[in-house]
Figure 1 (cartoon, rainbow, N blue to C red):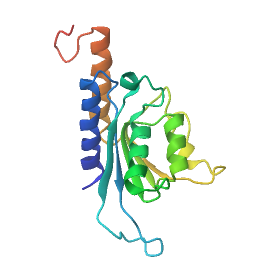
Figure 2: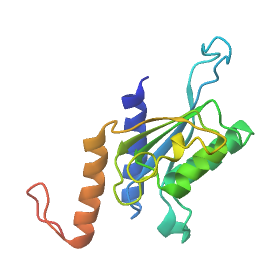
Figure 3: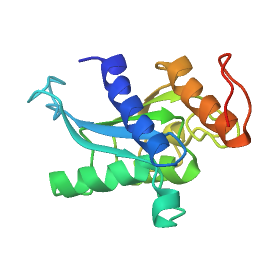
Figure 4: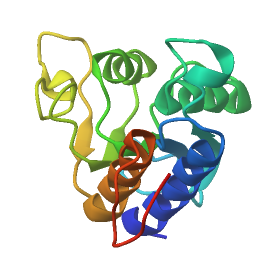
Length: 170
């Protein structure tokens, strides 16, 4: 599987969030242990967590998809250090989620749509690349950007009762 394949799975999680009345953001965590010396995989990659936003359902300001996925991955793997993991998320993470990724020591984050109002992995901040911190990680942004952005655009248009894609909503 490649980044797009994994992002499609994150998009399915985002659709689950939308069906639940949550902002449609989905995240998955993929675990692939790598030999640090040879940089070769030690095992096939596997999804260890699939989550979506649950702020409304749990009345939890920390109910972001990425945080939920990181917590589930740590539980599944039995470790808080997720250094052999990649997080795939449909919207560029905020400062809170980027900070959690830093704390979890992830290897990489792949995000879909940019987050110009709160993005912390390139748009407003670059938490992943701040060498003042004790860990940096790779980032790939804009994977299936249009599909991810369309989910958010449609959700908020529906919330406001606006038309989109030529269909009457309300």
